[in-house]
Length: 277
Image (cartoon, rainbow, N blue to C red; front, side, top):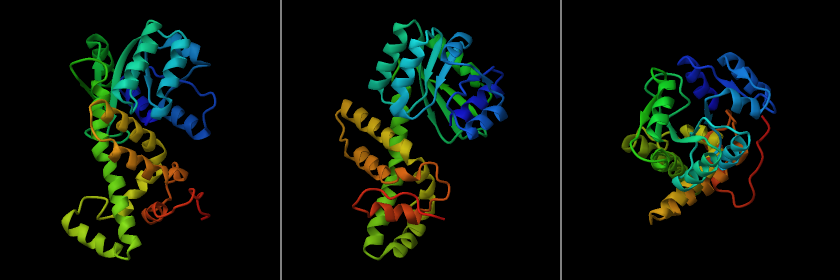
């Protein structure tokens, strides 16, 4: 996602910098193909950039914000991670203490590559929001400014994810239940007629969720906390987090199948490693 967002900023005419230190060869290739410029360290990045966008797993969002604050950044910091309003407020507090202006961001949709698929919701200081929105105007990552304070974009992002991503966990649970009782084929046939555009009707669609489950699990924890803040039950999100946790060994595994993921849900022991090809 981060590489695709950077590519859209480049497409919008921005000069985009990144930190190659400690990154993989594949990440370096993506950066080169995108036209990103390399900074020697975070201090140089903080000095050169007027806007910093944080796109990382939600569990790391606060740590990244603290590192950027320690580097002395005083520009516009966009946290575009799947964090709840409470954590977003803490991130804003950390950056504002050092003189930065924080914008709350929420990305919906797949990594942006074509128009009409992905959105960047923004809330917070109106002037800073307009500045960030201008970076992506006319690109495949469509910016949407929300009236109101920091926390609104994050709340919208998590609200959408609570339906969109938990639906994958529900489909996987239903398939695993049917599989355990010997009626999986019949369930798929039933869903194909009643719910044809869902992963319940085509379990192979679960495969993409398996490869991303290592990121989705902490996102579900954020959703649970956000639900608790407004007096909602947290069980849906917590159960989805447990489901995605059983798939964590399939991180970025493009070869994992829906059948393997369904089988993983029926385990009672610790997760298995990837099976040999």
